[in-house]
Image (tube, rainbow, N blue to C red; front, side, top):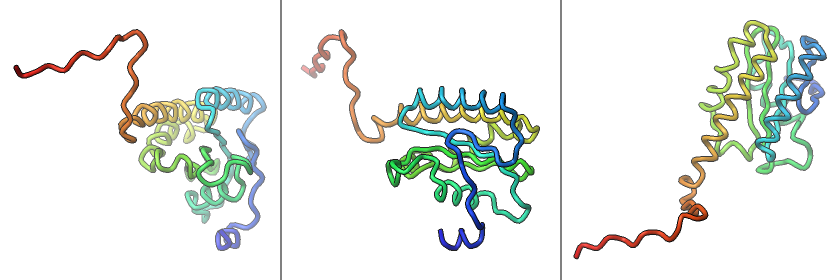
Length: 178
């Protein structure tokens, strides 16, 4: 992190939820994004989401910068460190070089690079057109799909049998061969 800090300089100030150091969003855009983020966080209360809109220099490596900003600025908060960090961070370069996502250590075992790319692909056409609200909404819609798939896979991943549903009655006796 020290080498990254020497390379990137002073870390930007991030506000949990929506940060717009590029100045591309209207107050209405920020309100709409915050409402959508709040809905996401209500559905997944152990998880947070922050999006930052920045105009990066042409020489700035976006993926490395996004990772550094996320770890240096910690939008998840001081109480959410290490495996307790279940935050999703999205950096959108308003200068047109792209968008990058990273997740906290608590999500890394479940949300890999392929899943992050899947979410970014859903938002990319909107970001390319400068439709930032639509891009964040599309991305969060895809993140929710990914999260639901991950949650549904957990019993299988951990070898846990799902409990019988109430009122289902006792399990049938196994059939015998004789």
